[in-house]
Length: 204
Length: 320
Image 1 (spheres, rainbow over the protein chains, first blue to last red):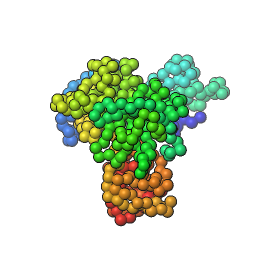
Image 2: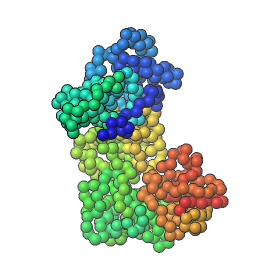
Image 3: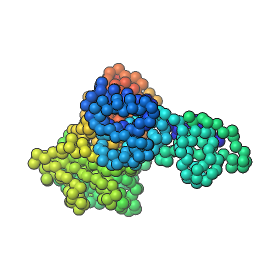
Image 4: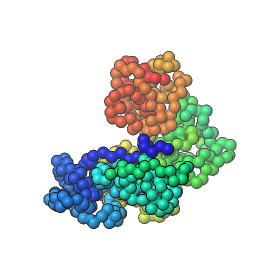
């Protein structure tokens, strides 16, 4: 079965400011803050007025996050909200999108699973590729969608994983669904029950 | 597209709806149903005049849910090369015409959360067909329609039959104008804007949308250019091994067709890109008039859209 080399696996690029936008909505988790600070520094050079139209939703995470938050405070953002975890950030993100105007650019910096969930919400609001930018920073742990029982297993770091829904052993493929914001997991021992490949941590 | 694929239609009704616009109803010559289409589609009407043939694109304004007839609106152009005058002066109820199958280059975005439609003058026609799909109310929309004066407001009765609050009229004669900046500054995310009408209006909307931060993927426009009149020139068709003369009032595409060489086309108005042709040799300059090629491609001069573009040159060789 094809595991890697699948075209649907998202490709990310380092975040750049898009000053063609009128409003800038930024989402970040932990070390993603560094990428967002870089974008804001870029804005200060090319279009300083954009910073006042920037809104940040951020989850401070690591030990050095206080420093990142301090830098955000000093930069003159239009508004900043801090959250305890990605899920509560994304809840607020949805309400912010509902009241946002055309001309908004979205910047997402964090682990891929977080980017994927943010993109899924953005898609509900018909944001297109030319309105969204994302940079993958942090853990490579995957959301894995069981194609058999349709449960998503979170934070998967291994090549195979036991589905939290149906307990089948799933092979984690590069086949990615933007709609589900998850990689597809397929039963690995369907042909030969009990014969599992060695468990390896590969998505760290 | 070539003439073998056209449909024979008969003119069932003609109505003068404004001093400049005639409304034509076309039915299939064999009495059957016409091919299905979606709102925003156009047809090419083939007109066999006494001296020459015209093939002009016209948006379908009738409901996509009614296929017993197609309806088009034809504005009489002041500087017509003959097509709109033919439709206005020669075509009668009962006349036979040929049309090409409908093609949609201006469809509504299917996952948009809101549609803002902006029409100027005869540019109202594609929207009339689209409104047939929008009036079920699942996706919010608004239509802004500007015309010179009330007597020039074509198809107003059709609009008035719909919810009035969604349609806003602007009359130049009463110095009313669309506040583009106000209109495009506070639209909800997922809104798409569509504009059809004169070049000035289209450029205004594109420029304002950009300055309001709209990404290109949410801005849609359609304008069929009439092939402009220009100086005569000659072109050599490399594969046909044929020299073709292009007179001032005939387009490059029409001249090539008149010489018996077929070029695939869909819109004949510089929009679709179907007739794009490779330039093999050029001693002079290409006069690009299309909306398809990027500025960079136009500057490169390796391709031309023969439907609307011309050349000022001593030698032009095309890959045809």
